[in-house]
Image (tube, rainbow, N blue to C red; front, side, top):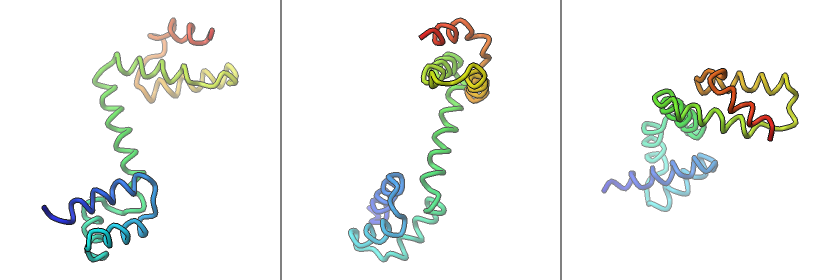
Length: 124
């Protein structure tokens, strides 16, 4: 197996864990007896800019979740209601309505279709 594969996997894990890209790259290159510059070059080709890798991966995950919700209206509705249930009880009525509207857009649901469930959540 290519020694760079396991080193790149380790580097991806380190970046997702929030480690400093340069420090992690140096440590992993040393652990795998690889030239740091060669590992950096491979990582840049595989991952793009290392400093933004974690953020880009989070955005990709969010996009995949949104796509899954759009394909499954039941999942979208359940996720929408779960998000409403976790809203702070300290929100004013106006703030709560604004959050519900924002969440409806995020989850691509019609809040009127979930009105009864929203009302039950409000009473808690």
